[in-house]
Image 1: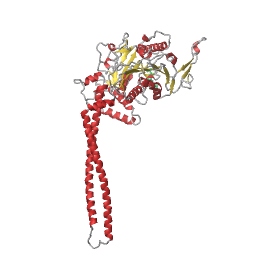
Image 2: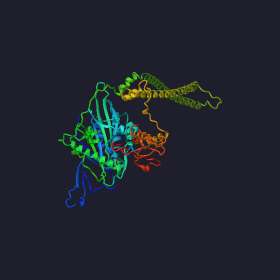
Image 3: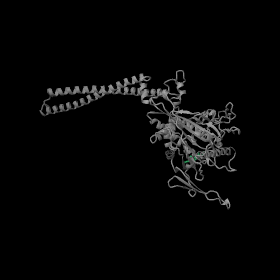
Image 4: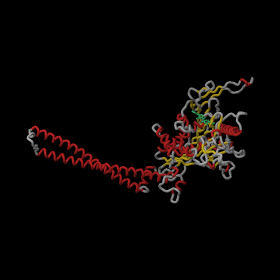
Length: 613
Ligand SMILES: Nc1ncnc2c1ncn2[C@@H]1O[C@H](COP(=O)(O)OP(=O)(O)OP(=O)(O)O)[C@@H](O)[C@H]1O
C-alpha cells in the first residue's frame, strides 16, 4: 500500500484577549499567514534583521473547537490507519501555546478532549462497525526527558530508575525502543485509562508562560492490526498512529531561567533544533545521509518520519508572537510511506459464525435450555391469546343476551302481567336468564385462566431473558478466550491458571466505591442524553482518579498535579534496589506551595545519567 506522501502543516492559534493583529495577518483563504515585525531601532545603521515572513499552510485553525481541529487534522489520518497506512501527528510550539490542550485536551471535560482521546474513540468505534475485520489495538506511551527515555505506562517503581532506562535500537523491522511496554487494549475505556494514567506520570514544571508546562516530549502510539475474519484470508494489515506532544520551545534568557529549568530548556531547544534539521534534510532529494541519530527524539521517530514512511501532520501552535517556519509544507515534501507488512494469521470466524459454532459446542446446554424455555413461552403466549379471544366473544355474547333479556322483560311488562302480584316468566325469558348465568360463569373462569397464563408468561419471559443473557455472556467469554485475549490471559484461563473459566477476568471488573459510583452515575445522567459516547471517557477518568485519590495509601497523602503521592514528614521514601534515586513518584516537588504538611525532598544531582523529577 502506498499513500500520498505529502506532509500537511496546520497552525492553531490560541485564543487570546488581544490578538496581535498589527503583526499577524491571516490569509482570507485560511491557508497563509503573514508576519510583520518592526525593525529594532537599536539595530544600527546597517540593520539587516528580517522583518517580514510569509507562510503557506494547509490550514489555519483560528478560534477553532477541539472537534473542528480533530476533523481537520486527524480524522482522515485515523481512517487511513485503519486501512493499513501509518500516520503521525506532531504538535510543535512555544511553551504555553496549547500543544497539550490540542493533543490530550482538558482533563475533566469530554467536550474539550483532544486529538488522542478522539483518535482512540474513532479507532474503537470504527472497529465495532467492521463486520469482517477484526482490529486489535496495542498502546505505548514514551517520554523523552533531558535526552533520556521513560515508559509512562511502566509500573511506578520501575519508572524513572537508572536501571530501567530504555534505549532506541535499530532492528530488522525498523527502529524500536528496547524495554518499552506495549499494552493490548480491547476497548476504548481501557485505552483512555492508559492515556490518563500516562499523563499523570509526565514531567511537568511551573513556567512563567504555563503553570503546568510539559518539560518533555511525549509519544503516544497506537499499533493497529487488521485481520480478516474470513477463513480463507490469512492476511494481517499492520499500521500505527503516532501522536506526539513535543516539549515547548522557548527563548533562553541569560539571566531568567535557572538550574533545572535551564537544563531542561537547553535539552528541549537542542532536540527541537535537531528535529528541524532532520525534517529539512528529509525534504532535500539530494541528501544521502539523514541525521537521525543526533537526538533520542529523531532516532525514535525514524520510522515515523524517515524514508519509507508516512504522512506526518504537523500542528504548529503559537501564542501570537512567535512563529517558527521549520515545518513548512515545502520543507516536508518528498517523504514516502512504508509498505505495510502482510503476515500469516490463523483462520478466523466472523462473530456470527463463531456464535453458530458456540451454540453447537461449548454453549450447547445453555442454548438447549434457552430454546426449550422459549418454546414454552411461545406456547403460553398462544394459549393466552386464544383465551383472550374467547373472552372477547363471551363478552359480546353476554351483552347480546342481556339485551335480549331486557327486551323480553319489557315485552312482559307491556302485556300487563305485572300488577297481578305474581311475576310469570315464559320459557324464552327463562332460557335467556340461564344462558346469561352460564356465560358469566364461563367468562369468570376464562378470566381467571387468563390471569394464571399471564403470570406464567411473565415467569417464562424472565427465564428466557435470563437464559439469553447467560448465552450471550458465555459466548462473549468463550469468544474472547478463543479469538481475542492476549496470550498471557489465555494462559491464565487454562486449567490450573489463576483465572477460573467462566469468570470475567478481574481487570475487566470495575470496582468503584459507593460514593464514586454515585458520582459517576450523576455524571452519566447529566451527559448521557446528549452524548452517550462520553461514558468511556468519564469511566476512564474515574479509574485514573481513583488510583491516585488522596488518602488511599495509608501513611501517604495525595495532591493534585503530576505526582500525586508525596512523602509525609514521618516516613522515608522507598528506594529501588540498584537505583540511587528515590522512586520518582515520591515527587521531588514541582509545586511546593501545594504540598501542605509534607516534607519535600530535593533530587540528588546526577549529571552523568539524566533522570526525571
Ligand atoms: N485553544 C485553547 N482554548 C482554551 N484554552 C487553551 C487553548 N489552548 C491552550 N489553552 C490553555 O492554555 C494553557 C496552556 O496550554 P498547554 O498546557 O496545552 O500548553 P503547551 O503548549 O502544552 O505548553 P508547554 O509546552 O509548556 O507544555 C492551559 O491552561 C490550556 O488549558
